[in-house]
Amino acid sequence: MPARTITISQQKGGVGKSTTVVELACAWGVHGVVPRNVAPIKPGASRKEPRRVLVIDLDPQAGATAKLGVNPEEIAPEQSVMAVLEDPHHPIENSLWAGVYPGYGIDLIPGHFELEGTEAELARRQGAFSILRDKLAAVAEQYEYVLIDSRPSLGLLTINALFACSEVLIPVKLIDTECTNGVRAVLGALADVAEHGGELQLLGALATFHDARKQTVADAIRTYVSGNLGVPFLQTVIPDRSQFGNAALEGSPVNLWRPNTDGASSYRRLAAEIAEHAPEIAYAA
Ligand SMILES: Nc1ncnc2c1ncn2[C@@H]1O[C@H](COP(=O)(O)OP(=O)(O)OP(=O)(O)O)[C@@H](O)[C@H]1O
Ligand SMILES: [Mg+2]
Image (cartoon, rainbow, N blue to C red; front, top):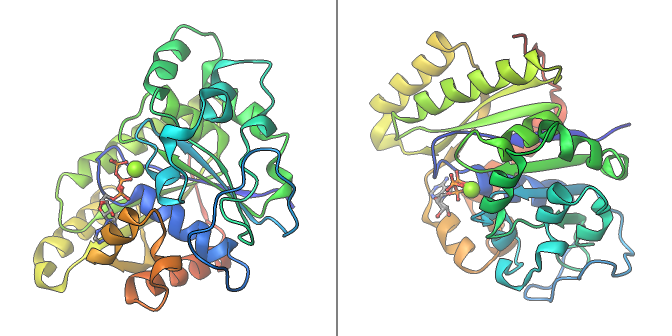
């Protein structure tokens, strides 16, 4: 079975995209109990455990890379997703970090701070939409899930993510009304991708940063996104918790750092919900 390839996209920044990527990766990928603070395995290292999840970080902020315990400053461009996109002769395997931590079923293709330059470079190329899709085909079958983190904009990096994936999940921060414009922008990009032959399904919207004290604004945002924009919400709601920021400072997903918190378990529920329900909404232009 080919991997389910899911891009997490939202034009609005700071809504929980990178957090969702790393927490889902942990929920699906972690095998057994593993000590913390162990060194990442570098590209080419031997792997003993089965791999379930591949994370691809397409954001120059490299947030998902850092949250998975890899310091983006220590990664050379040719060990990152930069070379995958820029160099037609660079095999994707050469940027594959074989296991972010030993014992975890998560591989990573890291982001890089200089990806901004890559985006400009791609703008000068023919056929730049589908570079990631074509390279990913070489390794996708090894995984059950491929999770792609995207930046808060809809330029060529994100367009590559949308062409490479089969499903899109749109986080919606329930305390930020501007998120609705971000959802609308993503829908526009999905229509463009569909028009150019990309095949995508919308997994739905994910409610993040839920705070019961701000229910009125949350209800208004939900009604607009599902009613006016036609994007249904997944059932799972992610609560607003400082644990997420604290875990990020530790260079760890909450699901490893504090797995017994309700923030961590909300993402495990989300992982189960996505695993059980293949998307039904085919995206049509
Ligand atoms: N449910 C949550 N509750 C509280 N804080 C959260 C939650 N999810 C994420 N955060 C924190 O909010 C900040 C933004 O989250 P994150 O980096 O996942 O968003 P993003 O959408 O990837 O941002 P960007 O658009 O800049 O890439 C981070 O500091 C993160 O730790
Ligand atoms: Mg991010």
